[in-house]
Amino acid sequence: MKNHLDEVSSGERFKFGENWSRFLTTLDDTRIQKSTNALKEWLGLETLDGMSFVDVGSGSGLSSLAAYRLGAKVYSFDYDPKSVACTQHLRDTYAKDTERWSVSSGSALDKDFLATLGQFDIVYSWGVLHHTGAMWQALDNMVPMVTSRGLLFIAIYNDQGPWSRRWKSLKCMYNKLPSLLATVFAILVMGAREVRFAASAILKLNLMKYVRTWTNYGSAGSRGMSKYYDLVDWIGGYPFEVAKPEEIFDFYHQRCFSLERLETCRGGLGCNQFVFRRVE
Image 1 (cartoon, one colour):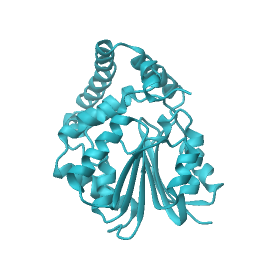
Image 2: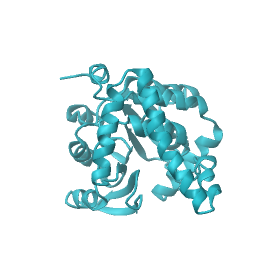
Image 3: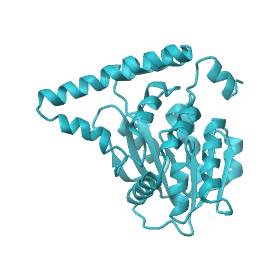
Image 4: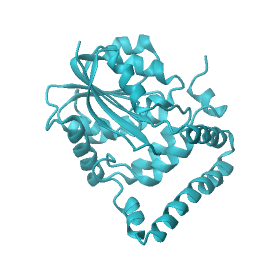
């Protein structure tokens, strides 16, 4: 079985952790507060005091920090060693002397590891499970982690049909290129996309709408993230799987979860977001 380093070396996996470590250089109190507000809004809770929260694929650690600030007992893990280091850095910086936030290395596909963690009031995995290489197995692995009446908050890439297949090919190509060529490739692909969006806005006499997609990025709903680093994550994010909203709904409905909240990307590029409650 290949490990993380082998997968990266063979071009089978994007260096998510490296991108997150660069993102952390932009982190400030404003981003942290926006992430905290977004988490409160989505969960419909003002506080997580007394609740347990697991961040499956913690990435930068920003969402874990938000949950910690809301009062939860947080457990964070990631498959990428540099993502683990990013999360640990945030813990050491903002919660050094606490026992209320733990960080470790682990995989959403490792059932034995997940079984050691027990159950949580909130299982959170935003934009992660579609990058495992076995999305449906990872989605299924979340089920026993959720307590009775607990919440499952996930975000999964939208299935755009042929466009998703094209993006998968582009992502695969990006990860197999040498670093310098991969950068040029990303600029060409994502640059062309942004020029197209800007041109469309100009033709509609609404350039400021496009400008605001950059200047307002990090506002409510985007969890305090950076548009630039999200674009890098998008072109590089591989493995890559997608699902239609109804497929995710049916999958968890069959496993005794009710849908509490849904926000789709309206059939376009990006993630559909779901909050489920376990009802068995």
